Length: 116
Length: 112
Image (tube, rainbow over all chains, first blue to last red; front, side, top):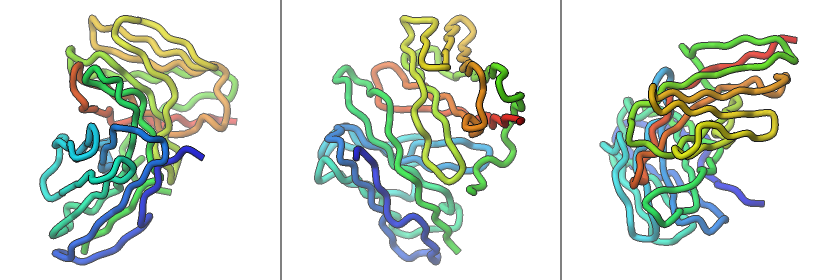
């Protein structure tokens, strides 16, 4: 089954304790992206990756890191989480059109992160 | 369910009626637009898309209309069903970029 998977689905942690949220897709998509979703703000793009070893900042990259060493995986790293990073996080993947844009994105089920 | 639906505008429709959900997008340079549906506790799911060289596109029970003059996008759902109850988001892709901008969403409630 074609899908995007995220782990963990729920995480409660404390301020400053490094964490990684994994994302994996089995559709051979070039493009992957991370979003956070907060009440009243919709989905905001954190980072995206156009292909292996190619990443770029979205609208809200502060406090986050990503890496894209393999095509299928795109982990989101919070080196020193803070309470304002409490949110619902989604990973997504898409085929690249090759013309500087992408097609529809397929989203994972989400990771609910709480930082105390 | 998740709390992301708080403070969202809500559209309530009777089962069987047509629904129209509107979205004002932000950037005149955007050339690709998508509607997503998000059910409680799940990730957004693609519904339909449209590129800026079109003003209308139809799918199964759904139609997207694009008015570039006023930067407006709408999603029409025909014969709305209880399973259509969800939060609906529009998204725009800035031309020549890999960036997406999402709207804040509209909650659709289908009344039996």
